[in-house]
Image (cartoon, rainbow, N blue to C red; front, top):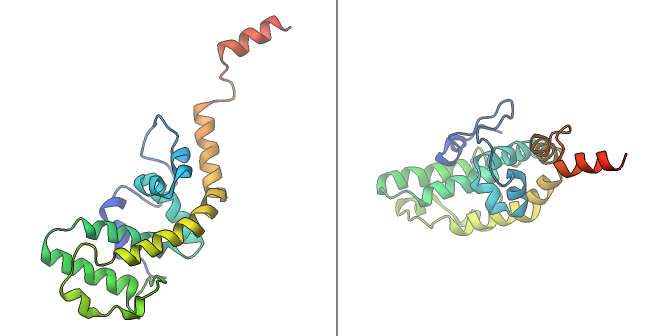
Length: 178
C-alpha cells in the first residue's frame, strides 16, 4: 500500500508515527475514556486519530480513516480552484479504479472524473458516511478491544494513579485497622 498524500492533512498535522508518545499533555477527562465513548470523539482528538491509524495500519485498512479525514478537510475548502485540486486528489487516491489507497464503497463505480469538473463541499458526503459507518461498526469496536488501545488506557491509569499513591482515607484505614 502506498503512502497517502492525505496523511499530512490539517487534522493530522501534529500527528507523527513514532515512539507513541503523546503531545497532547494532561487532560481532565482521560483520552481513552473519550475515545471509547464514540468514534466521533476519537476522530476529534489528534492523539486518538494517531492511535486509530496505527491500529488500522495493522489491519491494512488505514485508507478508510485517511479518506474520511480528506473528506472533512475538503468540506472546509472554499476556494474553487483548491476545491477542484482536492477533489481530484481524493478521487485519484481513494476512488478511481487506479487509486493507490482505494476504499471500498458502494456506488464507487458510478463515480467518474466528470464529477470533478464541478466540485461542491458535499460531493463525497455519501461515500464518507459509508466509510464512517464501516469504521464505526467494524474497525472501531475491534480497536477498543485491541492491545494498542488497552495498553494506552493502562498507561493513562498508571499516570493518574501511581501504585504508591494512597489516599488519606486508605492510609488512615490502614493505621486504625492494624
